[in-house]
Image (cartoon, rainbow, N blue to C red):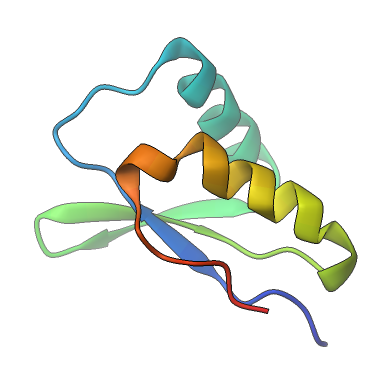
Length: 72
């Protein structure tokens, strides 16, 4: 299956805004998962190529927590 490869958001010690929290909860209820990586946790999300706009929007929502570009 082709699509957008998983990307990660590494949450620092900064607090999530209420909006980011809502997006995170919705993502975890849908297509996302959190994995522990050392002392950090990572959010992984994978979307179909047709959902690139949604993936880009989520990347923007968490832009202050990640420097990873979208991969497609």
